[in-house]
Length: 148
Image (cartoon, rainbow, N blue to C red; front, side, top):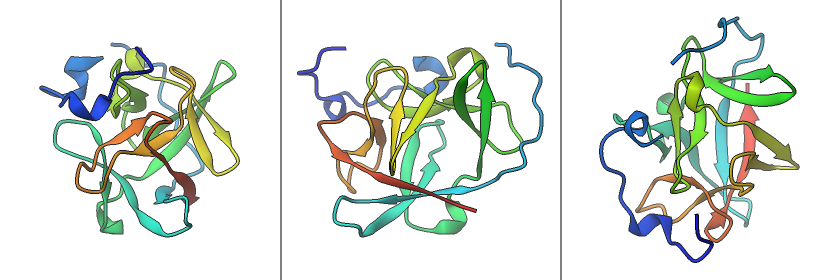
């Protein structure tokens, strides 16, 4: 993906599954958490949610926030929606979404930032109006807090 590309100018078509199977045996994780998203000024912008097409979006209602669990596998940290085989991933256009194991992408926590192992960009937001969550450093990089 070109560093000069603007992912927000390319609206996703279809579901996240279309853009990006077999999962390893799903084992219940002892942790379960929601992801609170904060701007660089320390103000909470909302929560990590998902739209009807499996794309990650900013939601304002904590009751609509996804409940995730950590899933370490092969020395890599993955995050999946609790009780499912759908993992947080990044599309080739830097959109974050949820997909089965074959499209899962690892993530690394670096302080309060969540960095995609796929494109090495931090979780970010283009704008509240746009609402999609990206892994793209040129947008507003989000501070991420796991709230149990």
